[in-house]
Image (cartoon, rainbow, N blue to C red):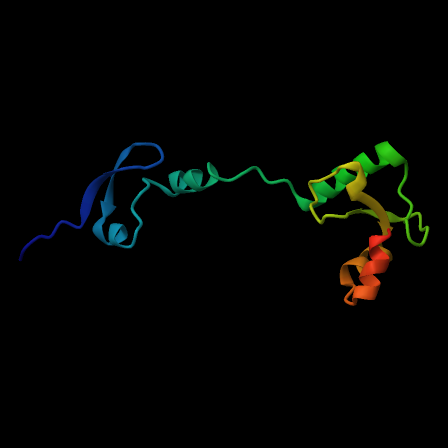
Amino acid sequence: MSFERRFIDKKCEFCGNKFDASIIAIKKGEGKFCSKKCSMNNILKFRKPAKSVSRLNEIAREVYIERHGEPICEICGSTHADIHHQDENIENNSDGNLKALCRSCHTKHHNMSSSKEMSLCVTI
């Protein structure tokens, strides 16, 4: 019975440690890291730190209040208003981009379908 070597010596692409990688894993495009921890750390090093959408909305609200006071819906006058980003970029808190809209008007704004309704919205 012949013995076939099923592992080869590899160097971890994240930490540089030597480890035995299975030939089958290498053929599948795996076998690059010595552990799951190194594999995950390699993935994470390329990710930008994420800010949650809720935190970005909190920041926009803080910026709006600092500039304009408590938000009041610019369409119906409700005092329970969200902050809407005109350009849909929740990281753009420039003064002209932030508008106060109550939940109802904000939802209507995002759900408008006809061009007539859209033209009304542009005047916000």
